[in-house]
Every structure is written in C-alpha cells, then in structure tokens.
Amino acid sequence: MMKKLFFMLVSMVGIAAIGQDNSSSDFSIDTIEPIIKKASMLWSRAIKEKDIALLDNLYDDKAHYLPNDADAIHGKEAILAYWASSFGFMTDLQLHMETLEGTRQLLYETGTGFASILSEDGNILKLPFKYVNVWKLQTNGTYRVVIDTFNNPLKN
Image 1 (tube, one colour):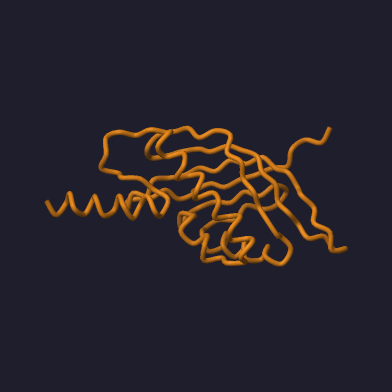
Image 2 (spheres, rainbow, N blue to C red; image 1 turned 30 degrees about the horizontal axis):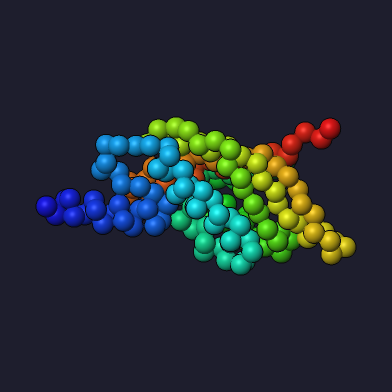
C-alpha cells in the first residue's frame, strides 16, 4: 500500500515537474507530448524573466549542450551558467515542436524556433534555428534534457 501511495505521489509531482507516472504500463507519445511542450516553454519564460532557476529542473546533471558554431558544454551547472550569461542580450526564445518520438526511457524532440537577440544598435533580431532535445526519464518519474542542440537553417 505504501509503495502504491508513493508511486501515486511521485506521479502527481512528476507531471507537474515534467514527467509522468513511471509505474504505469501504458506509455503514449500523445500523453507525454503536452508535458514536454509545457516544459519546453520554460526556456522562453526563463529568458523573458531573466530567471535561471526556471531551468534548474529542465536539465539532467550530466546533460550536454551542443550550440551551433561553439564548443560543447557539459554538465547542468555549466549549461545553466551559459543560459544565465545570455540574459544580457537575449530577449526571447521560442520553440515549436515538430516531432516527439522514442520510448518511455528516452524521447527525442525536433523542431524549429527563433531567438530574439538585442543588437548593439538597440534593434531586436529574430534568429531562426532548428533543434533537437533528447529527454531521459529520471528515477523520480520526471523527464530531463540530456542532449540539447541547435543549428541555424541554411540560407538560400
């Protein structure tokens, strides 16, 4: 009974914190997709509010961030420091999921988005990109990003 109560509590907390009930034998991308979309909105909110704490539960401790035309960043703390350093020039970040596939343990999300960047002359530039996020199921039933990468689309 205690074990079942524990899993119910983890399930309720997990959904609120980017996850789903790990004790359920039913897994459906359709069920998890809104949870991942909601979690993905945290990047935009963190940028707009200049609040790095919003991203703290988004990344796995051993995550890897692979930005376009830059060195890879390894580990959650280093990734959060990178995002915090962008608060001075980034005003928004929007992600538009195109696909979400995978298994209960590992999901991969692809999509497009744009970053709003404050230029030196005070204008806001909207820079488009393509992205892939890999989400890993954690022992507490939540999902966290283990790989985050993006690249700029080809220019015509």
